[in-house]
Length: 400
Ligand code: PLP
Image (cartoon, rainbow, N blue to C red; front, side):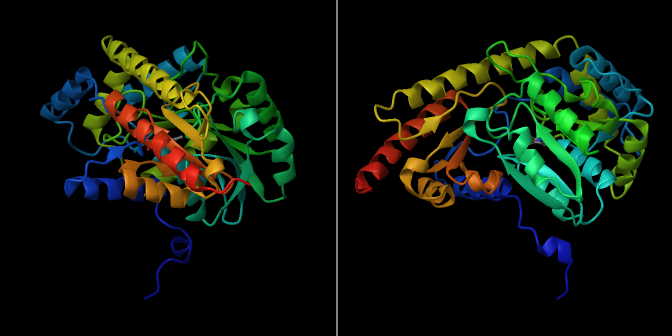
């Protein structure tokens, strides 16, 4: 049977397929320690839930403005000004989308033609690749080294430029590494994009989850960036709203206008009661307290995880202390096998679910990602089992 040629080129998201496998095992009673998915284990803050409920009772259950409710767009514009130092007109420069994933798709499909190349740092969130491929575009992975916080150097980006390069993607704080790009680095990326006339997609979904007193810099606030940048964000991570499916894009009118066409096609609009809830997330005075408590918990779990990893007498698993987001990216290269094999064995033998690094790019196959958006006990059990298991694996490797 003939199916879409572009779709045939992509495989499903590896993260979602591992998560589905974990759900299936759990439904059969297997006690899996689930460290695979970046989904906060906290409930969505109550004021947000209450406002969605009230909005439904108030009749906001019909079609709505396809760019997003004016009140929500105004709240997003105010948040971008206050938190990110960015000025966007709520009427023409903000678009509400059905998640951060969808915001990415709307932005990239708005500016890229089939055949265009897009530079993506490796490691990176896997969904970018498929978003590009279903539009006939080509992801070009550019490796980032651990000593540079896993962000590729500008020289490496330069080497990957061709006449087909249309855009560059930057995600900070980063999934899967937890690293934060410095202002100097982001400015160098902007200068590079200006030299080659590239669009920039700035994925800032982890902007609030930052440890150690570091600061998030919004790339579009840097000189030269605004007119070529889509700022992309989501309510999923900051507000523990992964199931609500709501995010947004901000950018110059001409870009948002095109992204709006993609958003509207097939979707019409985002459920209005969910938009009201998102507006509450941005404006209710109680919500920041909930967010602060979640970030404090991620920070505590980060320390817990790092203590366990640092206690290895022989550091078989190498770990960089994350600066933000809620992941640890662990180097298992000493075990001498790619981590798709190791991760499958870890699930089978120790019931610990992790994501193999190959999901985050072809250069990351020696790593695994674990999330710290799981309960402390899960993190402690999962990492203790991982360290013990890795130690046993090492004993089976002949000394060279
Ligand atoms: N960007 C990054 C880097 C992510 O890690 C995720 C989700 O894991 C998203 C975007 C999309 O989030 P959502 O689609 O839940 O809004």
